[in-house]
Image (cartoon, rainbow, N blue to C red; front, side):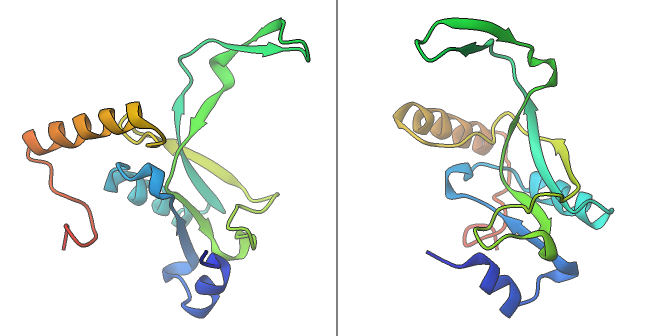
Length: 143
């Protein structure tokens, strides 16, 4: 496992911004990276893509009984990549408490790929992007 904080200290990030990503979010479009970095450069300590919660969320008790419906108007699902000022990056590669963290609009097709169904959806997204002529992002295929 890579110690992200040590790497960030050895190779200082450009403009003091570190971008955190997870391989499960492989389909996150380039625009998400640009948006979170821009938000930090504009003054936030950290920025995270977020999408609205559209499912009904229930709170249950210890016995599994539904106690209440959680209002979803104030809920969001967080995505990757995330950007953080180097000074607010914790040793476990999370954002430090007290950081002024903002959200940027997420992307519906930037979902985590965790199981076979997610993989099938990811294949469909890649096929749709290819059919639409979308160019690959940075990396080995996008150079």
